[in-house]
Image 1 (spheres, rainbow, N blue to C red):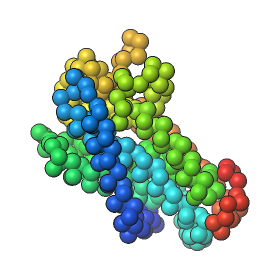
Image 2 (image 1 turned 90 degrees about the horizontal axis):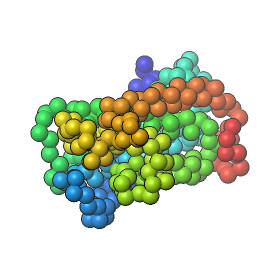
Image 3 (image 1 turned 135 degrees about the vertical axis):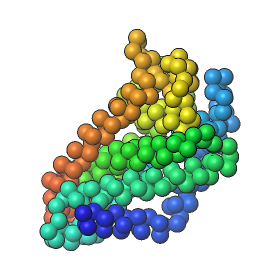
Image 4 (image 1 turned 135 degrees about the horizontal axis):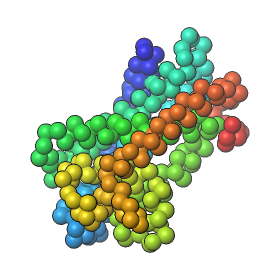
Length: 278
């Protein structure tokens, strides 16, 4: 347990020292909020700013938890990971430390954006809602940090990792309804969005943060918090179940791949020579 806490604390400290990265991760969400809330109109949604802010918060958590696995790549390249492995530490503990730190950093960023959002109109009527929101962010952070660690365990260098992460985050972000409502997308892209785990993550998170849990099924569908596919309706509860299953799969995959990767075969220099995949 000590090694898990040590890795968690180390990664948190590294992140907090990077003030430029922290600043831009706060500024960019509000830039998107300004741009997309200005063009987004929907008669079924009473407050498009809060609706958009909820989507931006969860995509920030998603992107941060996924990309923070870069620290794993850097630890491998610098040789730090090999030094850790010399000690009598199980690899699953190392993976747990990386996952928890990524989820924590992602959640902290989400909390910061929510705090700022409070001053632009985001309010909660129930004292339970903020705790539920934080709980969901932690779960989402763990889910997608598992995916990030899985990719990090396969990729050879940080430059390649950034390219791969960009190729994953961009379509998942813009095809989940966080910035652009799915109803505004072409039919083909709407069907593709149904295979996107972020679609269900965003829908469930919006339901919680906007306190829409008491809405009827028809109202949830109208506000795109539930999805009707044929005769089957994916409610927010089912959406969260889908996300948890997705996360459980990648948590298992990430810890398995991380436990099997041969660190001795990875070049410690930050050259561009390595292959992309093991």
